[in-house]
Image (tube, rainbow, N blue to C red; front, side, top):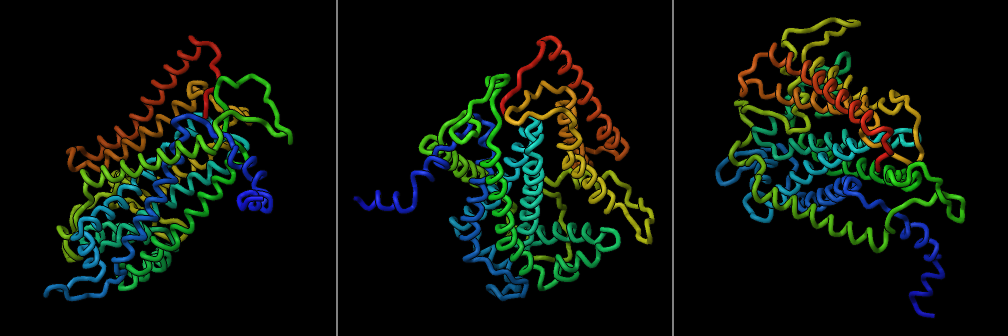
Length: 423
């Protein structure tokens, strides 16, 4: 008996191969969105490990060439002075953006195909929590260059945290290690970004994949209406290609494409240069959040600065309304989608997006709302008044909803009963 056969017999690898390596994976481009997010996370870990070798998580002043500056800022400038270090920092930045974009598109696919219905409600919630965790991890990393731009941006987040009614001051001081900026803020955010965030995201990703393995993926429209076959254990056979070797080869190619995309973005679209903005100072540069938080910034611009009301002894001001109440209400509505959709669920088949004109219209109207709020973030550049932005923000989603519902309903009537599309 050879050594390989000995290990196979002792570890029962034949059963492992049959159960896991032969698991069918769907061959559909939209299913690659989740894998893209996973590969971006791996790229973030690898580039982050490299950057951690040179970064100094300290706000204490050091003397560099006769100039006094925070150690965190000095180490960032040092990283940028080396071509390979600058490439790693840029790839770390763009991998985060690509990961968030892939998760958003993945959730949109799940929504428009109704793949959130029973028994997949938990994975819908996990996907949203994973998106929120990724955004929070990105926010924690935003401070680490500790230049004038990043400190100003983080100060906005500190102000929003303090605006939370009743407990905002205490929560902000705990999260930001005292009143921001304090000497302990940089080490604490460094711990958030390189320790807690990767551990939490890894656990969420693992749980998400475990549930997918247990529940299996949904089926294409060609299988709709047909009886499902069963394997020897009584479980349902699903279509797809085996994990080994076909799916593994596709994943390897996809990882190289993700790596190439991050490298190309890093080469042609640089992140904001820390050396240009300089260390923290009394000046406050014009700061706008990245695209995934720009809609929250737009909501803040729409709320009058003097708007406030009292509730149970607490003052709820414009910051709390624009950055907490409005986003919180939108997030809660998205979270409850599986329970708000009362249509009967299919255990194995996903709907075609046009099968439900109401869901399609609501989804596109929601995307329009996010886009309108993001446009509101550029009110000064676009020379648009707040009343005009209010009209655009409220009216454009309604117009998109009505147009989409009318066209989708007409298409459905013309085509008859639509088949169920692939998840």
